[in-house]
Length: 277
Image (cartoon, rainbow, N blue to C red; front, side, top):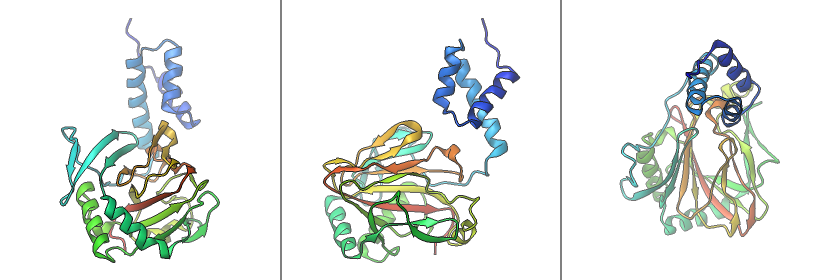
């Protein structure tokens, strides 16, 4: 018997989404109630897309990789980069061999003398602050401040089809055993009073690239709690993700899991909607 997608079902789906239930949980509840999986998925996709279009901020253009044809390798200009894994929502792409071992070591050596306790952006004021959720040490390079950085930035720009000038300077972070960065969003919360000040320098963040500069002995993965994904850190590899609007619907919640043994070095590149100055 054909199952009809009724207005009552649509309203129930919206109510579950507003209550914070994940799509997986809503789908499981519908199947338990006797709904065919294909019908349930179609009802959710149609209902939530219509609902989100009415309630979400407008979508922004985002950086992305050209994965048409499911390529194993991408041309980064001076280097071939491996496509290890992709995910659609959130948009996550795991890459292998983005940097050589020598480039990773050189970034660490250049960053080490400039490390200090990592800060987070304070959206209440537009400034920066020490945050107990982030227990690493870090520093920022100026964009293009060395030949090495120019090479890496040009490689990233080619891969994600986003101009170099629309990216922040690369940040290098060092995590010792026990250090972590609890789950968070990289976009700037539009409801916070300090956000307009932050957005004057290039607009919203719309994409993130985390590059692993060494191999921790244990732990230190990049987690995406909304989808139960953890990316293991591998020297020279990276994880890219984008978010087309400053809203949890992007499912871009992510964090740095605690380092369990050894230490972890990463380089982070944030991409902005406009020219970052």
